[in-house]
Image 1 (cartoon, rainbow, N blue to C red):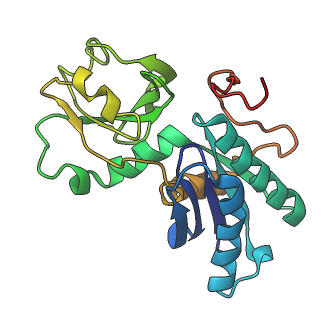
Image 2 (cartoon, helix red, strand yellow):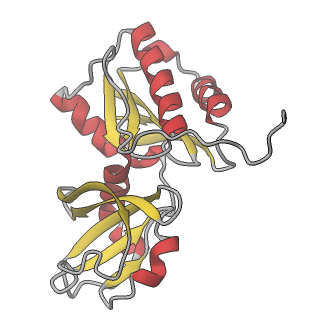
Length: 237
């Protein structure tokens, strides 16, 4: 039995799941905004108490490595590292875009039933503020066809792929791009957000291959540098 705790905090959703041999045991998540620092440890505690499990039964902890929210990623990675240090178990990282693509590819009929005239590609999008998104392109086997990047979507986005593929576009960044994605082979269909339950297939596979991170050195994949902003309403003048 392989028991893996999956932690996903790359977006506004705070999500924690427990998987046994790659199968979901329990999921706790909230999309009430960026309260991850309060929620993630509470969810972990509830998962183990609610299932009469000891936390030292874990074989590994998997965490979303990004791209996504700078603060959200740091919270998730910090909690995951702390657990791995304390329990002396391996740390696994999972790309937040890849997990969405793999989940959607495996559940294609759920999100877009009856569409099979052309092969499918899967384009997850995570909101990167303003008109920019974090995105990549994957085939039905979860292989990366177009690398992870920060993009401002225009009318030519993915134009070289639409002639030979149907493309599912999804995630919390997809809605703001829909006016630019009006090709007949483009479909806005799939999950609207990330979730820890999307991680379990990848984290299980990485565990079996022993693809672990160096706990001391591992850092989230931010993709863009963090930029601090100055509040518009200053308390002190």
